[in-house]
Length: 566
Ligand code: GLC
Ligand code: CA
Image (cartoon, rainbow, N blue to C red; front, side, top):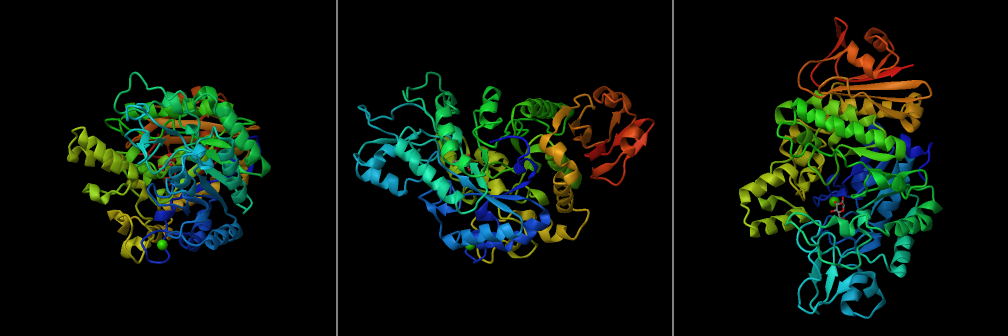
């Protein structure tokens, strides 16, 4: 159910990429005990919910997104009891846990797949997509999400289907027994007292069963129209919800690529399949020549404001600047010279009060940035490895590829959390599984914790404000009102409910920028003067004070304001 008044509308979620968060035993890999040790930090930060990346038993081809036993914790992350302890102790800190539900595929080392490989006629062979071809070639020309064909071949000649890496065979949702097994897993975990799930890659579970090759396939692109949000998926999602989530007071956020506006309501509306889906519509400034230019900001503004207007009328969404699949937001949205406290806090303010539930990715709150990757050997991501090999074969040179991964590689977000300026940034006593980003001596939790002017301190204020009782109705139920005319390079909007409203104004340019009376009046039907407006209460400001000059509000470079109106 996705109705009004649900607790998760007023929650702030923190994403933990377990492998990189905190190592407790010196093996260089983050683990559950490490998360338990850091619960006080998360409580101090003020978040409500942890989204924990997969901790299930896994060969770790895709860092846990390839599951070989859904009922067990991987020994690298701890014991099964550690998970029970984490759920229980987090609760004592007032923090709920959601797990990453990876049910489009499992691991090729899952018992189901092993049996299916051994015995073509067994029950579990029906849990996957197998095909034989007469010419010995792939059954079709579809490309996987990670590059290469969606088909890989078994020694006995059968082909099996995978949307992602060859070690992630897709589960056959057409098979009712398989679906029942999946529901059993979900209900088992819900019975343990978790709050819900982040649902991985869910729009891939329905395929065009003709498996016909696609006519015009360019090398880069996978044929989304054949296996992403494909017609018929509704039946699966409705059943999934009915058999699992509905039986509990369960919160779900889906990674649902391919869901356009026409389907948004079905996915998240009053009786939507999920509590919310992520809004990926403005995830980066990718391809912008100069991210700091007025043009680039204006394009970003349009994307954000348009999309928010649509979503606020049709459902609910998860909003974020970062996750484990993308480069760091300071790299994606800002030119190097513009990165700093003001720009980072401006971006944070910009998204935090939008219509939806805000997500913070570990390290974002201290302003972690991309690492510098000097060779392919430093990269760990399975997608990077597959793509690297494929593109080399296609004739690309190593230098260009390295540059690509320095910009867009998923490893950028996965470097260890920077806790202090000591050995390995306080992440591990051993050798970290992925190198620590060079800037950790300046950018770390310990340093920012005591500093009221730090990004971390700003995030704490931001989170506290987003969760403030006084704003609960506006944030949870209020509409979204864009102010497209606020000024070039300025992104501004109002959120309002029952006569109460807040105004968010962010200057996304690295220079002074004026929001004038005229512009404000145009966007603001009450016709208030700037003086009136600001006498009413600035709730948040990433500078000291504001400047009004000949009837104009002068915004400093990257100044961000949240103002309460009555
Ligand atoms: C999702 C995850 C990503 C993973 C993929 C396959 O996109 O966010 O990390 O590689 O699904 O499970
Ligand atoms: Ca460890």
